[in-house]
Length: 153
Figure (cartoon, rainbow, N blue to C red):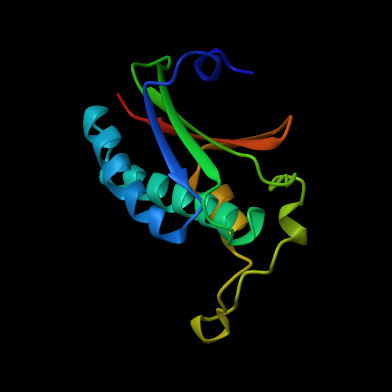
């Protein structure tokens, strides 16, 4: 595991497994991004990925059952060239699910047009598209998904 994720997180958000708690993600991400001078397009990618990951945990991992815990930690480290990398570590105690186990070819095909676009089945593709890198780790009694985003210097 990379050193930045074994270190104490700089920022932590604890959510309950309720879709209403998703509203807490936006201001938290905005505060983290303001502190690290994150460009707007990267902030959008972070918000999109975290909302997708957390909503999937609530709806699928916990089956909509309220009052389970979801923790989102953020760490930062400098990168060669003077930039930063923000890592967001999402942990839950839901049944095992590795979102990276499926190949991109096995995921729902991209629609050919907006008329063919249907809700659902695109979340993991969004994570692959917008996060710089993704890692999954099965924990004893839970899951850990790490999403990394490069922040230019």
